[in-house]
Amino acid sequence: MPTDVNSGLATLSDQLILATVLLYVLAMIGYALDLGFGRARAAEPARELVPAGGGAVAEAGEVTTTDARTGGAGTGSAAGAGGTRPAWAARAGTLAVALSCVGWAANLGAIVTRGFAVGRWPWGNMYEFVVAICFAAVTAFLVMQARQPVRFLGAFVSVAAALGLGFAVRYLHVQAGPVVPALNSYWIAIHVTAAIFASGLFIVAGVSGILFLGRKDGPSRLPGRDDLERVAHRAIVIAFPIWTFAVIAGALWADKAWGRYWGWDPKEVWAFITWIAYAAYLHARATAGWRGRAAVIVQLIAFGCLLFNLVGVNIFLSGLHSYAQVP
Image (cartoon, rainbow, N blue to C red):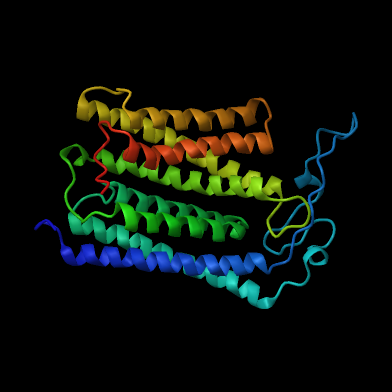
């Protein structure tokens, strides 16, 4: 370990990451118990056209609204569809939220102690970057959970964060140390921070999209497809301008570091492809009125581009951004 690194803080950061993984796994179990033993929600009615003079298309969410907090529905009884919800299942869900908050704090502590250990912004390599993205995904989920009933996402976001951190610890971990000169810039706090938080929101949207495709017809403990699509869309609407800013900030940083705004480096190309894919999703919804399965598939294609840009480019492709220190 380099002599200018605080080894005590670096070790504490590594230990906090391991604690974070454990807490996220425990939270995932609590969310799974809450979701698995909760009351099933009534089946979604099919979309139907209203006769001329009676308005526009009536969507399922407008005919039967699902309350994701209680499992009830606007028409019919969720209890009738799935039975009475055990009290311990609700307590497991509440405990899971608490564990997520504690895990979030441990995740934040790991990032902060790593930063102080090396005296720089703590996302100068792939390990630190993945740790920060997992933190951003859980942050996005907890903020959304505080504002709307999306606790059903908890099990899936928690397992994604735990697997991401586990992958980082097992395959990407490098000792705390200095970064290459190109990263010693205030732009890392602007460009990379924006990319991290946009990615966290995109992950929440991706989880919702996957659940949309996996939800079967009939009673289910998951919300209706309309609700799942709505959660994904809201996350993308917030994330897309942040990602746009990250791409622009990256171009400005490239001009400062390499004397040009754009050089078709693999990382630049895939960041732009990701931007195009999400722009296509938003454009299709806003202008062509795409909804449902087709729109979700476009969104998940964009999500795949994002994942390849975040991880695959650094591992499989070489370029000016190949300083991720992948072991």
